[in-house]
Image (tube, rainbow, N blue to C red; front, side, top):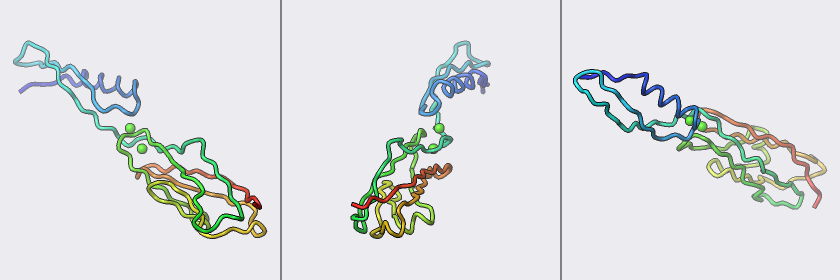
Length: 148
Ligand SMILES: [Ca+2]
Ligand SMILES: [Ca+2]
């Protein structure tokens, strides 16, 4: 039986958190054994990455809406990134946006449900959500319909 100096391990883990923030997957810690052994031991510790950061939409998302687009027209892929390892992102639309648009829940590909009439609505507010199962990030933009 032996005791591990927790402060030593905690110190290493704290350093990793400060240094990397997020994408840390392993670290090395020196563990000193306080009984029955005169030599310090070194072990490899695997640090699991917590899902503690929200996904972020890429900043360069833009697309146009045109009266000439048919139903099913592919408008844009709204991609987000998540700093946490092994995150699975799910894309969805808010209720009003779902009336006019569809999104592929895994790829973020946004498509048009039906042709649009600029004389009825000359702009649309598009609200897309991405979730990592814990955090949800919203992307919102008002797009003007162009007549061609
Ligand atoms: Ca994390
Ligand atoms: Ca996350």
